[in-house]
Length: 132
Image 1 (cartoon, rainbow, N blue to C red):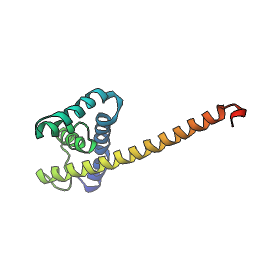
Image 2 (image 1 turned 90 degrees about the vertical axis):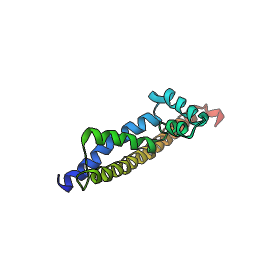
Image 3 (image 1 turned 180 degrees about the horizontal axis):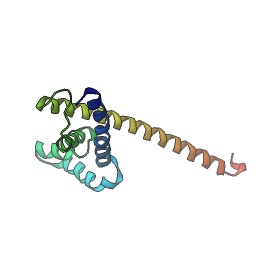
């Protein structure tokens, strides 16, 4: 596969990795399992137990495992053929996926800030004139 094709694959494969990792570790649909994992992460008596359950609460950590699954499914390799290509591809995919998640978090934070400011302004405009 040509280098340009490999780079395109890198940026495209990182999208579903970021999406899956973010959804599992942040979104409401997985809130209950995530809360269970947070609880077990803090209360587990063994180091292995704490680390295993922490995996499902950290988007960075979880993205490594999602990347491993994606590498298995797609057989994607970067720069080299064989195990070296898988290692380079794996860490590259994690890196790009985490850039995507960081950008998404910034955008979400900014949108939330704008929405809260709009709601505050709307509440201010609803006040009777005598209260201003």
